[in-house]
Amino acid sequence: MNKLIKVAEKTYYISGPFHIGVYELDTISYTGKKEVCLIDSGVDKIVAKVVDELLMENGFTVKFIINTHYHADHCGGNNYFKEKYDCKIYSNKFNASLISNFDIAPAVIWGATPIREVLNNYFYATPTPAEDIENFNLPDGFEIVSLPGHCIDMIGVRTPDNVLFLGDAVISKETIENHPLTYIYEIGEHLKTLEKLKNIKASLYVPYHAEPVKKIKPLCDVNIQGIHQNIEDIKRICKEPRSIDEVISIFFNEKGFKLSMYKYAVEGGIVKTYITYLYNEGQMLATNENNFIKWQTR
Ligand SMILES: [Zn+2]
Image (cartoon, rainbow, N blue to C red; front, side, top):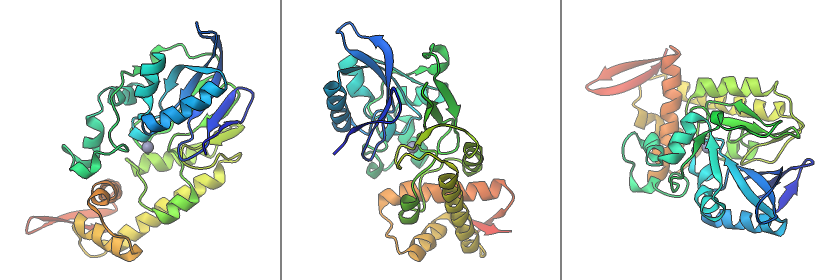
């Protein structure tokens, strides 16, 4: 059961797998209802409808949406709200352009038009016109916090009553234990963001897929630890020269996971992200063995 949970004077979030933020604005719509802004919008129109019912029960109407980033589980509900409320949609410049032109998003995963297994709700959302939040006069007290790494230029949103919505900057301990290869676009940037986040003050932190916390440092440390574990595993696997597909195979076999085409596209890409980081950091060498590019830990 999804619920609208009040966490500060005017800030709420929706419980369930997607922690959508709701902030009660000071304005009233022409229909006489209290206007709110949403922070992210759910994975699809089914989730959006459930959220909308909770909003209607409370007499709320949506004025605008801020998306923390372009991933479809964060902006897949945009189209529902846009059609119903004609609300504006904002993100920063980079993410706004991808939310507006969604075909680029699945291609980021695969490097070309992706295999069909990737074209699901998590990787493809109906494109909705989104604008650069820089050009919008946000109500007083809102703050946009830069949290890059999970994807290029991800943002967090602080509401005027000091609740910080984190997008996917941190995930839960359980997720890290059960799915160690969670999506990260750039490991080095993400590690810097996690270190920075430890010192960002807020009265409550709301990750999109993990329970809200009053103290963020322990969760940042769990996330950093999970990344370092993956780095150690991949460095160990690459003590001998390995192709990317060999690394994926050994990593999955060691953990007892089965590789589906979907996981090959998504989590295989994450293995590539780690190898890219280690190579660019000078911790790994690439050699050409009979036209197989092989990666070896220095
Ligand atoms: Zn994401």
